[in-house]
Each structure stands twice: as structure tokens, then as C-alpha cells.
Image 1 (cartoon, rainbow, N blue to C red):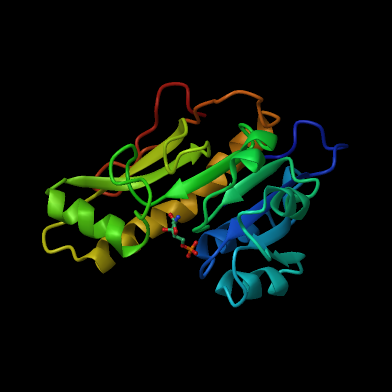
Image 2: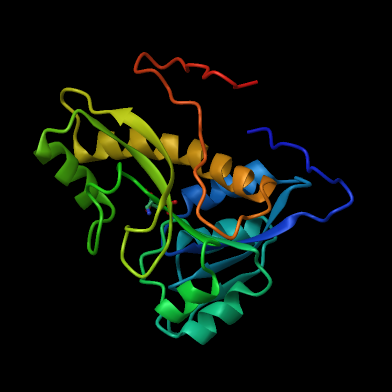
Length: 223
Ligand code: GRF
């Protein structure tokens, strides 16, 4: 992805923290997108568990890492996030304690591999999400980026990107197709929030929606 240039090149890039629990392919998408950017930099990676593959990706990129001793400890989490202006949950499987949500209100976002508000909530992560989509008979799934509030997967939606369900899809094939879109959507949303100065209230970000034939449609007003 090409990141937009900073509105004021004299400002230093906005520090962004990424919270992880798993393999970190979304983290990788952010590291790649903002490598050398004047707009944002991935300043730290915070993991709910030791041994997460994402930690290795962070180390390879030279980004400081923290493994939480107790992910339910709001003070520890807020300390770990340090001076981050924006914190991104990218495959983070723990509930963010309410006191930490309050400290990062409208500065804490999550990516979910389905079109919320459907197929979200406690326990809906990984394969289970895609199994539920397939057994519902839905013809469209997708990726959602939303603000984190006190309830699982319920905060205001920032952006969504639909992905068609195909005949013969398995949870794995659907997950792979959604994940590709996640890797595009998440950096776009982070870029836009940072470009807007990480607004202190919920905003929506409009992304180019793909047509189902794989091409993208330019919306009125798009450059
Ligand atoms: C992604 O599907 C994301 O939407 C969900 O967890 C998965 C994380 O994958 N919250 P990765 O660790 O980024 O590869």
C-alpha cells in the first residue's frame, strides 16, 4: 500500500500500538504499510501471550514488544500502550478491561473477520466465525473495523469490506479470502484515522468497495 503523505511533514509520525495474540498477519500488513511512513509508525506490539507468532514479526521489524503478565490488569495494559495515540487490536483474543477502554476511548479499534453486527460477540473468533457464516446461508461475509467499547464486537463500526461467499466454500477457504481483505482494510483505516488526527469521536471511513467480479468501483468524489 502507498501511504498518504503527512499533512505537515514537520510532524513526527503518529505512534500506533498493535495488540496481538496470534500469528500476526494483520500486524505484518500494518508493518509493511507504514514502513518509512511520515504519517504513522508502529511503535510497539503488545501480546496477551508469550510465543505468539506476531512477536517474531515485531522483532524482525525492530519494533519493541511487551508480553502482558495479566491481560485483565488495566494499569498494566495502559502502561504497555505507552505513548500510542491509536491502539489496534489485530487478532487480540482477550477482553480489554473497561478502565483501559475508557482511557483509550475512540482510540482503540479492532478488526473482525465478518460483517458485524452479525457473527460477532464473545467466543466468536477464528474458524467459528466462518462456520457460523456458512451455516447461516449468508451469501456475503467480509471484514469489519470498529471501535472497541465495553462489549465484545459491539462498538461503532468504522469501515466494512464485503467478501462474497462462494459455492463450495469451507471455513478455511472463506477465512483465507476474508483475511486478504483484512490486510487491505486495516492499513487503510489506520491511515485515514491518523490522517484525521485520531478524532475524539467515532467516525466512519469510506473505502473503495470491490465489485464481486474483483474490480473496484470508484465512488463519486474519489480521486
Ligand atoms: C483475523 O482474522 C482478525 O480479523 C481476527 O483474528 C485474526 C487474526 O489473524 N480478529 P492474524 O493474527 O492477524 O493473522
